[in-house]
Amino acid sequence: MPTDPYAWIEPSLATIHQANWYRSVQTIQSRPGATVVLEGREVINFASNDYLGLAGDERLIEAAVGAAKEFGTGATGSRLITGHRQLHRELESAIASLKQTEDALVFSSGYLASLGAIAALVGGRDLILSDQYNHSSLKNGAIVSGATVIDYPHCDVADLKNKLGQHRQQYRRCLIITDSVFSMDGDLCQIPYLLDLAEEFSCMLLVDEAHATGVLGKTGAGCVEHFGCSDRTLIQIGTLSKALGSLGGYVAGNATLIDFLRNRAPSWIYTTGLSPADTAAALAAVKIVQQEPLRRARLWRNVGILKNLLRLPNLKLLPSESSILCLQLNNAAEALKMGQKLKDAGIFAPAIRPPTVPTSRIRMTVMANHEPVHFQRLLEALMEG
Ligand SMILES: *Cc1c(COP(=O)(O)O)cnc(C)c1O
Image (cartoon, rainbow, N blue to C red; front, side, top):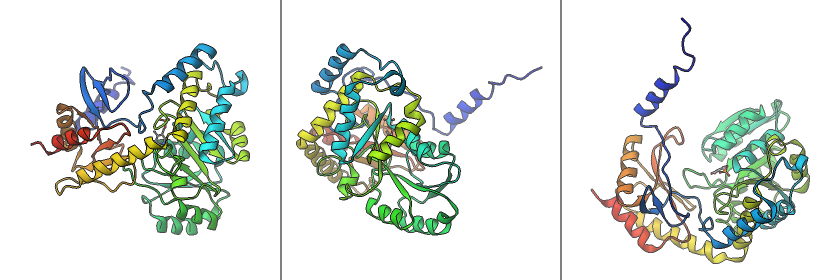
């Protein structure tokens, strides 16, 4: 009798449950913000990447509605075949202006920007050196590219240098890839050192500014600006869906790079362009980032407040230089328990467990529109029982 070829799925799911790795989605019933209605109950939100509180901003909503009314809901095809809107180019110019680069290219998501850029830049004869804590989009981009991938220990520049010395010569091109703000830890990669190494060993450097765009740097350009490296040659990718409150991703860099990507990045060429509404919302957000530095100042003030509150002997706060703060817990079961305890107390802060991260934790993201009372409530909930 033939066996059921799908029969393996149920036991696999059971294994995920047994390891406390099972995940499911919770429903939000309000606009995004510092507080949200989660499954019928108002909670304080430490689970969103909407760092500047723009996803619920009236101006972004107006921009999205206006663009949908004027241009319709869908981009109706890939930009090369179907054509694009002036809005797409306006957004790309705005991103390039924010990033202080010659040009930029917007993708349908940050994930697709990573996949497309990496796959376009390297291939079978090339080498990728990748931080072991990199985001899934970078890791999968590396796999899709067909290049040889070597991981280096998290932020270990000395080890990276050794590996470059050992392997660089055997390959045609070399690309170093890294998150700039590590998404599940909140620490930063040392961009100046990576740029020096890239120069020394003739490598390209690609940094993922997903959690840095709008957040870090004097003008909100990101981690590259934070480290004073805006005038150096590198490839920056990022998302429109975190501090920019919309949906989509981008690559920013020099004009030749961007022109090349328009011709070689499969996840840009063979997918539908960004919708007019998402494009217009992101464009409005970039302008707000540039015109309202106070939002960023408020975010960093809040990060400072929460960090101080969490400096307690019985809490293991992971080192962070961003608006992502993590409390380490001993295992997945403990993290789940803590997540549930917080939820019961009206705090939305997710437990992050393997396989997303090697060690379990509660991950909290700070927003510009959090109020001191929100942090007080979080602390009380953490201290209970
Ligand atoms: C969220 C994220 C992405 C993906 O961006 P999307 O626009 O959500 O697809 C890529 N890299 C990092 C580091 C991220 O945190």
